[in-house]
Each structure stands twice: as structure tokens, then as C-alpha cells.
Length: 301
Image (cartoon, rainbow, N blue to C red):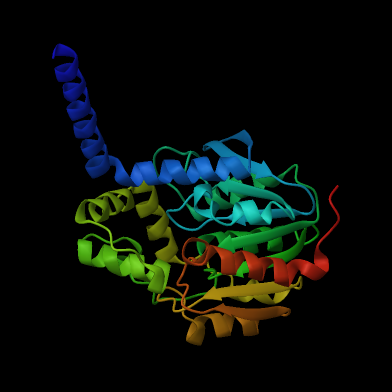
């Protein structure tokens, strides 16, 4: 009888702890699961010291180096659903950009120059035939890297990429403050694949967006750091992979203009995949990446 009571008490406590974690740390647990899946596919974890703190890099696979650069408020773990497939064909490198994931700085200010410097540090030893795949802010910083080091970048893949001037990014969509705004952001990111999530999960996502580092990065974005006048200098092959619909950077008005400004760009649409196809359409995105890179795929080293 005592044993049964003890077991029942343990189960009750464990259940209560599970409910508590679910309702207070669900987003953190999801991020942990994503990170664990990423590191399973890319098991080499290296840390680099910079003036603004550590930068974390995850690598795996063999062949030409394919660098995955995440977007605003995301982390390397966001590539967890595509990394295993890509690592079967390439040496895949994913980075926690400064102020994101496990990378410092731990406090603001955080600016575009910090983001760009962190990527530079993480890629110093990765050779001179890089393929860069960047989503949103990650596409922006990937373009900046290619402009700074045209001799090191073989191909550039822009996934719903920022970088050109665009004043229509809605702050409430980027940094929601209410559940309704957060739901709208989820739809923007995932499109038709958006799962219904409970209110406590939405609240935790909103709280993450209150990170002062993200706030400072948004403020700098408003001041402008756009690449319009330099886009014509990007003469390497550029593949624009675009999930639709994208309320952040729509095809009509933004992506079409970006394509026209780039000397060697092709636009490929991923219908009903939203702003971040690595989440909503990982299989379709992986297939498209392999398809557009197939002519340039190198033999494993």
C-alpha cells in the first residue's frame, strides 16, 4: 500500500512538473528538440571567440561546403528538417548568428555589422568555394559576405531573402505583442502549414521577441543598411528560392525587383510554403536546393 501510494505520488509530481514545463517552457523545449535534431545531422560543434562573444558552428557531411544562414530571431536549429538530406550530398555548415541561438553577445547592442562579423569568423577556415544558403536576414548577410569576398563564394541561394530596400516590413508582424499578431506571424512563416497552437505557446513566442538584442537589431534595420547600389556587383550565379505567399517580402514588388537587380539570378517559387520553407516545406526545399545545385555538385573530398 505504501509503495502504491509512493508510486502514485511520484506520478502525480512528474505529471505536474510536465504540465508546468509545457505551459512555461514549451518554446524552449521545442528549440532544444530542434537543436538536438540538427546536431544529430551535423555532429561537429565548434565555438569561436569574437569581440562580441562566442559564435557557434555545426558541421557534417562531405563534399562542397554548403553554408546555412538563418533569419531574424531564428537559430541554426531552424535548419533541422533539411540538414540531414543536404548533408548526404554536401559538407553542411550551420551557424548561430551573433545574438541568436547559443551565440553572443548576451546583451545589446546588436547590429548588422555584428551579424556580418560573426559569419566572417565562422567561415574563415572553410575554403574558397562556398555555397551560401540564407533565409531572410540570413540571405542579406550572405549577400554581404559574397560582396566582401567574391573570390570565396561559388553560388548564392537566397531563400525569401532580405537585403534590398523595402519599407513595408510590418513591425507587428516581425515582433508581435499580442496573440493575434503572433498567430499572423506564424501564418506568414508557415503559410497553409501553420499548426494551431495554444495561447500559452503564443505567449512564450511573444516573450522571445522581447529580447532586447532583437529590438536593437530591428531599430538598426529601420535606419537602413540596404544593398541596392551593390547588387549589380554580385556576378556569381544566384538562385532565388521563394516560398509563397510571403507577407514580409512578396514576390510582386520585392522579389521581382531583387531578381532584376542581380546580374545572374533565377527565381524559383515554392507555392504555399510561406516565408520560411525550411519549416513548412522541408522536403520540397531540400529537393529544390539539390536540383538547382546539381550541375555544380562536387565529388566528396
